[in-house]
Length: 566
Image 1 (cartoon, helix red, strand yellow):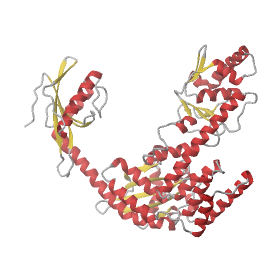
Image 2 (tube, one colour):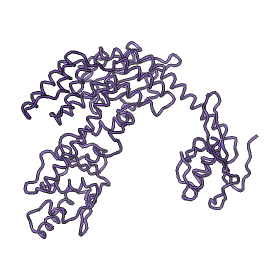
Image 3 (cartoon, helix red, strand yellow):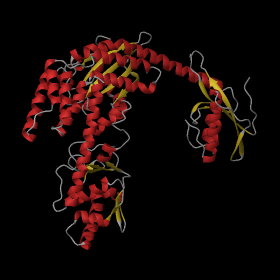
Image 4 (cartoon, helix red, strand yellow):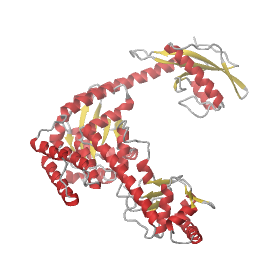
């Protein structure tokens, strides 16, 4: 894995969290002398904000006359443009200011600090994966080892950046550690807590978290050793003793008096979530992710296979990554010695990778060297169980990366009690998917009865059903954009009127409104399209309590008559 993350495109990539690394199309480029590095970094971190030339000249040449500083800046910008090569267009200059565009620029600082995933509002497994990705970006402090002697204002700016990003990283680590601790994944929580005290060893709250997690992991001796570490550190550096709270914690740990949620309690909560998610496909990854995290995994693959060919018929995963999944499905599933060993192992119980295949031999296999190592997979535990109603069986593999300990049989044995619930979840999930397919077929049969374009739409314009004539209209009519899943009109006034009418139809179904009479007409080239809106309630046969209020929209050309096939 490259230190500088991102795609393999020709974008400029700047990694500042640690030693400065600058790459173009994946190849390191030589920027030149130190002030050029500093200038590029200040422009990059400004987030495409124009910076005044006078400000930059004063920042990097503070002891020089104004004209000399400006001249040095012009020369530096020329050299910087030359060094950036194919990305020189990102550097935009005018008489008064300088800007580094972020179009085509990857910057690890922006990846770390973006607000798409707030550590204060963790919604699901995907948010945790994103936060863990951010943590991996932080190799060391911002621009580690870099300084510009004689440029005090720059060094002050540099220190502020370091402190801000350092606090941001500590906040991420704290939230990740707490999240995995609450989920019962104490080993994974410990990984982030240890990173926290590595960056801030004198933080007693973080040290207590490490001590507590060691104890929860059954490592009381390590918890005691950690107490000795923080006590020595505080005495040597600050000449103080640990706080009363820290002393009380180690006393409770030594006496075994602190209480924690048992594995059984955690498992019961996850079983409830598992069953609640059966008819909520968007929650499956999150729930199975929580189960794998509680077992101590960092990622998982949940796959349905054919018993005879071992071909994967369906799957979903957590934190594996689309590139890894594509590579696995395309080739590596066929040479996966662990999967084949699991298929032949005793059903309905978890097995560790070390039990399934000798570890020394595994390290010499194609699946390990060409797949597992590049995608950071080192240890695993998995379970296989059959579907009695088909020739399929399910494999659930929980995975850990390099630098982690192997799964131990004594740790995973209690999770065998989860297997019957996973089996039932798979059966119920398959029935739910079958009913969804049945519903789609029933909808299609109804709409195909119309000899005009027929749509079923929700109040926001989302299309939940359409016939072949409707498909043709979406492709050929000039009044729509190229959208296929939502009705989007080319003109905003048409969009506004459409949403009003389709909402009225939906509200009429719910009994909170009435639908205006009459038709809506739109000129479409040489033709006139006539829209008719009807309240519609659809209950698929055999699906209890599955009622969908929506709008039935029939669109006819004025040259055609509206009728139903008899």
